[in-house]
Length: 454
Image 1 (cartoon, rainbow, N blue to C red):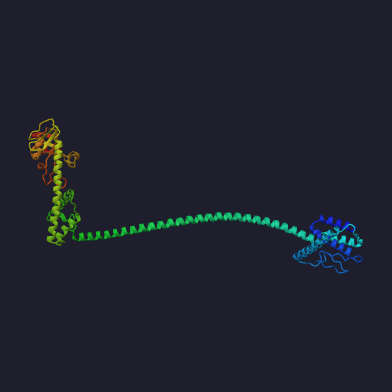
Image 2 (spheres, rainbow, N blue to C red; image 1 turned 45 degrees about the vertical axis):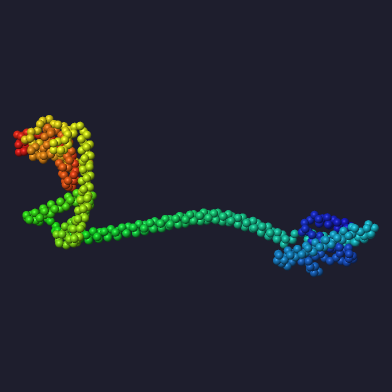
């Protein structure tokens, strides 16, 4: 019967959790002691919650009366008890295997079981298998801790998600700030370049201003020097008497000749400074010449040589132009040569003969061979009215070739015009002159006197 009960207990224990092993080991230990020590009372069962120590007789402790221990120490004691009971189970299994291998002829005397002890053992087993209030409280605490952990984890996940969102926003703000910083740096570089450019321009403008100030100072100095050497200011009251008027007229005549000479030389390619000419005149009148006689003569000779060379060059060019123009003009079959030597072409002969004693109104246009206009009476609306006998020989001969209202073109060589001197400043030396002559009106002798009288 003892073997059957032990087999039943072992079969039931094989289906329980490992947490039930301590009570099963307690049962096996009591059974082993009963079989090996008959007639002796069994010791009371040891509680697995008392740390493995037997209870004192006459005192009954429950799980509620046990001293309070730290939870870590409690679980360490439990682990040690489980390990001890595991060793006992191993030993018990070895003994059962040894008994099963004994010969069948060997008589096994079954020990007598005490049902009272077995009842106490079953009661202890039930107490061992039951969950104590402390374990229930621990389980509740574990469940509460697990729920708290789940809540904390959910809160932490929310905080982590918010932190990620904030981090993304912060990253976007950081990128924006970096872009703003880069833009600010670019603007700073552009501003610095602009400042450098403005500084260079300012330096250039300052240099130009310094040069302008210097030139202005020189001009003021020259003006002051010229004013010191220039004649006094002439007013209308000064010219009321005879002598000042004559002196002033002489100065004007001399000034016009100087201007004419200067313009003529300019046309020849020889430039001159009017202010320096006036300074020389003023110094000469003031008796403060800046050049000695020898140096003055050398300078004048060099200047004259330059002027003569330019004049000869212009003169030769004018002769060539005149010859070429006359040669081309003579190709026209209407062209004739007058007895005095000029060439002419009758463009319109006129309608009435002009007696030598008549007076005429003529309109003349005078040009050079290159088309430069010297005088154009037609454009100016002017006429030259006088008796035919009073005209120069060239024009008297030309008028005799025409009738009233007639017109003609004349090509006059320099020998019959202004010669090798020309007519400064417009007419160069040895210039061939081109004239267009038109008889505006003819007045017979009787009418000529009336015309002259009017």
